[in-house]
Image (tube, rainbow, N blue to C red; front, side, top):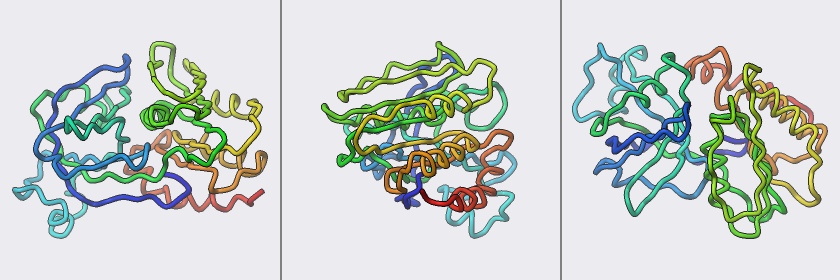
Length: 278
């Protein structure tokens, strides 16, 4: 989920819901565990992600669940729906995988599931993939995102060692959505409260007006596709950052669900890449 190639595995896992924790009024954290996670590993990247599989209610799938067989033998419109979410935390000792879900009311697929799922229920998923971790060679780190990027930003800040320098801009709907993120790094987090405004407008303004410290920056910029695209042009054309200094991707696009966004994302990526280098 960056300009750089991502590393991902197609291994299928089965997680059992252990508990649901409300991190904020509109952020539910689902903690998965169980024997189905025995082969799961993560930790190389701080933007690890998994692809959750939601079966269609009217389709009877093979037992045991085999996504490769389903994709081979079933028509595409009968495949389980896929939703991509960042790994907020993986605890290998406890065998617990935490995934955060932004709540947008009753609409959508994964959000309502996370808000109503009961301990003991199970879900299959594929992964993890990933492609970003704070680079040790950087003099400082810039992290920018909306709620969808907050799990990865939190994971990155928690992974930074003492002495690392970081600046984060995080846009949320209001002050009640701020989170307590603990880090050993010398980090400053600026929370931007959007209210009824459009997602990303405050981030664009804040980043454009920010005076970069001296030294080499490693930037992580993720979230809604429109502001991400605008900031990529800003970083490449106005700030003169190279591709190696950027991990940048649209996690979602307003007006589209994940199916629609993924179907058009390759075109979006081509458009973004067409921007001339500084």
